[in-house]
Length: 330
Image (tube, rainbow, N blue to C red):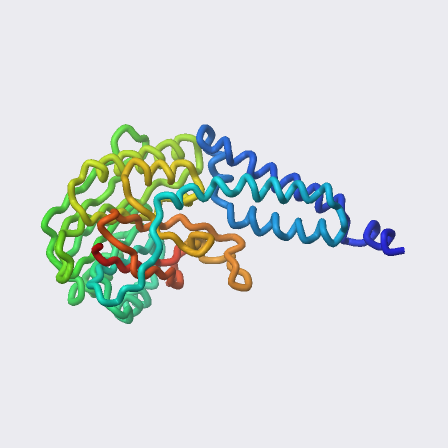
């Protein structure tokens, strides 16, 4: 009677085995991500793969389908190498005795009109950040920059009508500013480099900011990888001790091209509990789990800096969540 119930009910072992095969297939496809743009898209859902594998394993145990357990087991096994970026990571150190440099990165969405809400949120931050990096900054966002000039009198304004404008707001003067054009790519794009001093921090901060194109075709995928490679090489050549590289790069830590960025630049990523915190899109979190969300907004740092704090905030009218990080000198 019991076996007949499972066979004829919604809990159909064959159905879940087929889903388990699909899940394993997705992970296998991701391993071709070094060579094909569509395959690389499958690299970004490691959290979902692992969660699915755990759920299927429980279901197969309940249904006593012992051979089927091989599917989630292989899925989990193939997901482990995706965390190789942790070799270039550093844990958060909560040493409150050291002076810190605080930065906010926010892809605010070029069509976002919640300017007042963003301003009030920035003003409410405690402690106040030293630097705000706004990607997808439009000409309308010049109003926001002007409104915040009392807190951030030093500003770099490169707004655009499309989604690749950038505004940097800073509390202290810039010693150097450079606009870096991306070369040999089909779509015009740029990165910003700024150097400045912070009270209590011995050495200057050198900030690189890039909004990479989304990899929604083979050409765009190639350009995103080229953009990250070009800026990473410039970072490797930079002699500054304290380097920050931030942006919406449309890539997760689980992609081989993210690991290339860490290797080429020599920078580190913060080590978080189990998974990197998701930042996009603004929907898809169910019962606290980012079931439809992935981490594509990043703040990397040089080994001369120690991460002291990280928080992913509410989206404030954008499809991205802002990221706040604090750093101390070693």
